Length: 624
Image (tube, rainbow, N blue to C red):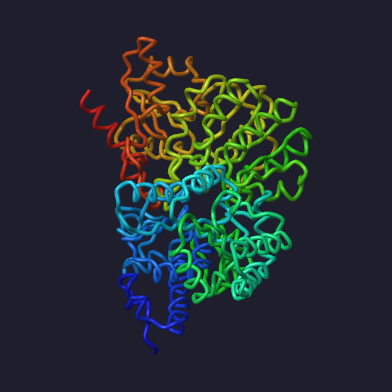
C-alpha cells in the first residue's frame, strides 16, 4: 500500500516538503476523505471538493496563521480544515462535540473568523488589512469568496471601500457558476464572459512582454504599454468592473492547477494595493454524482458513496409540502409570484420554477432585495410568496418592518428551517424568528404543528389582506400523508388537542410532538394534562389563554425559539395583564448560541424534549 500523505500533514508548513506530483496525490486523498466523512455525517460536499487544489496552493504560498485566510461562508473549507491539523478528528465533522462544518476561531488558530453566512469575507479582509496597517503589523490578508457571494449586496459595499482605501489584500474569487442554486443576475453573466475569454489574460501578458522588450525611448513608453493593454482588454471584454473599482484583476486561472495557482498567488502577494484573482473551479470535482448534480450535493444528508443516493423517507417533509402547496395555490391564483434568495431547491420551489417560470424570481444571495421586491409587487396588486430560511431572514429585517409591515402589504413569508436545524450549528439555527417577528405591527405569525397544518396555513394566508409569516422546521412532522382539500382555520384561534386538568401544555409548531410525549409521561405519574396547539403566535388567542389559566394550576409553554422575547414570554405577559395567578413554566432555547449536533441531542441538552419537560412539571406539581 502506498504511503498516505494526508496522515503526515499536521500543519500547513508540511506542504512545502512535497513536490507537485505528490501534491496531486494529496489532493486525491483529501477528496476521498471528504467524500467518506460527508457520506457518513452529511455536510457541504460539492463546494469543498471544488476547492481542494485552491486550499493546497493557499497554504503553500501563505504562512497561516500569521497570514490571514478568510473563507466566505466556509462551505469550501473542508480541505482547509484537513490541512490545518484536523485530519485526526475530521470524522467528528458536524457531530455534537465534534468539529464544526464552518470555520470557527475557537476550533483552530487557522480559522480567522466564525463564518456561516455569505458575502462577508471581503469586509473582513478590508478590516484585517486596515487593522494591520494601523497597528504596524506585517501579514498578508486573503479572502476566499465564491462567485455566488457576488449576488449579495454587502460584497459590493466592501469592494467599493477596498478600491477607495487601496489596502494591500488579495481576494480569491472561486468561480464555479453556482452558490447553492445556479447563480443569477448580471454579475453571473459577466463572470461567464470572463470565463469564456481566457485568451485575454494570456494575450495581455504576451503583448506586455513584447512591448516592454521594444527599445522605445522617452515617457511615452509606459503610456503606450498601458494604452495597448486597455484596447486589447476592451476587444475581449467590454469593461472590467473590478479594475474600475480600483482592484487589480488577474485571471481567469485554472483552479485545479496547483502550479498556476501558486504562480499567480505569489505574484498577487508581491503587489501593492488590492488584487482579485479569478479562479475557475468545478463544483463537486472528483465525485461524479456531485459533478453531475452540484445543487443536490451542496448541502447533503448522509448518502451512499457508490451511487450518491440519499435514503428516502416516504413521509413528506415540511419543505416538500410547502413546494407542492405553492404550486397548487399558483394554479388557482394567477397573481401569486414566488421569490427566493438562491434557494430554489432548498426551499422547495424547484417544481414551481419549472411550472411557472414567468412567476418565479430568484434574486441570488440578496435577502433584502427579495423582501423589497415582494413589497413592490404587492403594491401593484400581485400576491408575493417569499420562501426563505429563518436565519437568512434576519438579513432583511428592515425591509420586513418598513417596506412590508408598515404598509400592511399582503406578502406571505414562508420561513423554512425555523427552530433548531441540527448539524449546521449556530449560524443556521432559526432560534430567534419568533422574538423578532412578534414586535412587528400588522404581522400575523403562525406555526404549524405538522405538514398538513402547514398546507392549511398557506391557503389561509393567501386569503388575508396583510402580511403573514409562517415558520416551520426542517425535516418531517407528525403527518404521514397530506391528502384532501385544505381545512379552514379560524383566525387567531388555538386548538385544544386533548382535555385534562391541573396542568396545560401549550405548544408552538412542531413542539406538539414533545407536548404529547410529555403528556404521556405525566399520565404515567398520575396526572392528566391538557395539550393545546397554539397555531397563532400573533395574534394570541386571549380567550383560550384566559380559559386555560382559569382552570389549571400550571401552564407550560413549549417552543423551539429563544426564551427571550419568544412565545412563552408573550403568554406570561398577557396573563400578568389579565391578573391571572396561574404559574407559567417556559421550555425553549436559553440565552445562548446553540452548537451543532442532532436536533434530538440539542433539545435534550436544553430540556426541551417531552421527557425533560414532564420531569420539570412533576417536580413543580408535587411541591405545590
